[in-house]
Amino acid sequence: MKKIVYTLLILTTVFTSCNKWTETEDNKDDFEKAALENLKEKRDAAKWIAEAERTEENKKALDAYWKMLSDYKEKAWLNTGEAGGQVPMNYFWFSGGFWTTQKGVAKTWLQSIPDSVVAISMWGGLGTRPEKISDYQKKDLEIFHKKGSKVLMCWQTPSVGLGLPTSKDGSLSGFDLFHQKYPYAECYAQWPEIYARELARYIISLNFDGYDVDWETCGDHGAVTKEGTPLMISDNNYENIGKFVKEMAKYFGPVGAGHLVTTQAEREANLKALFTASTPGFHAKEAEYIAEFTPYLPANYLTKRYYFCCDIPCTPYPPVFVTGTMEKYFDKHFLQNYNSETYTPSPGWTSPDMDRLGGKYYNSAGSNYQAGNFKVALTKAKAVKEGKVWGIAAYHGQTDYEITHENNEQFKKYLRDNNLKRKYLHYAFTREASRIMDPRPDYSGYVEKEPMIILP
Image 1 (tube, rainbow, N blue to C red):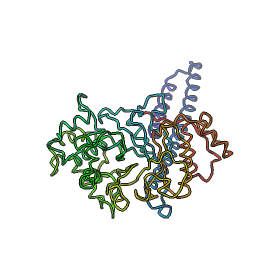
Image 2: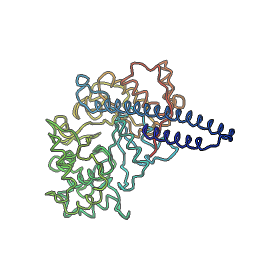
Image 3: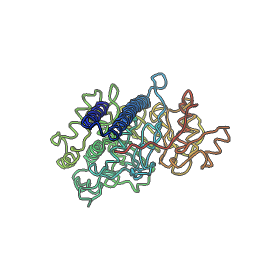
Image 4: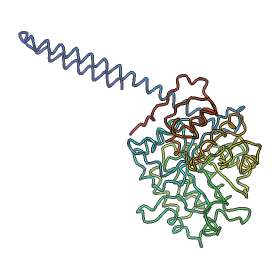
């Protein structure tokens, strides 16, 4: 940038000087006018250079801030406790339909989410094919990633085909397309693995960062049948959901000793095979998504870190979700203990039992923002501060965008009860919970401003 600015300045000076040199001596007024204009141009050029330098400094400062955020958020994915450097996880289930990046409507951008939020999942998915992602969404995701934040997909996962994108012509939903390509009568035994691979391909092609399995035997998915809800079938100790998890974990989730994938080289080989139609064991129809999605793969898709998480709110617990086994496949578990406001040792406060699902270092306690019960997030943030659990998770976290320090009775009561004065323009509960969990050493210079949205 500086090189361009200086080049332009030199050219401007040369052209101005040549004009002066060709002036006749008796054209005094014009000569003086040219001299004044030259002075003005030099003055403005100097201002221009100074501004460019300030912009460069600002860019460096912003890059340094993003680096600091990214380094911090990486520590939230640890499961070591304070001794290993773990910091609190702050997670949203974020409505997939809300991410519309409308110009002038900050809340529809990921960039408006507080920087303290480590990861979100697009609850319910997008249904959008990778070629349909807009330039605004691509830029929004780019900046969100620069902040070290991650984007997962998430929905109740009882069946196969859910959440996949529509056919290219839009005539079939992803669910119907899956069942057309892989009929029940022929492919039931392979369904869990095929679905895992198709889903992984889709997530990777969107430049998202992983998947959160919401596995709910108490969910609202209707009767359990092999054809309708195969991932809920209890045969062979819930073999189908086990197959799905193990296949997904080839591509997403932790790498290293004690995990399914033990080396980065193995992970990269798995990802390369995922987009190779001739890979042994693949169904012939898998070549369709491979061909359609490969042009949209991020440049770093082989080396990128992908995350695999789960939230299991009700029993029974299949083997892949039980402490001692789940750590092999998953990065984190998110509790759906939305209604409990006070902490008592598990299993009373946690629902289900936190110790059965990874333990306190793996878990984040839940709040249901959609139901308007924001205040439990603050209680649970205190439990995080006390080391009783290591994160918080908010269902439909985007609904907190509208909450300020003065428009919500729950928040105003909290301020009064604790004799506090806070000023939050957006995401009041999320920001306060972050302040409780892991406060800064000093807030004297803190001023909340409207979100900065960087456009393409």
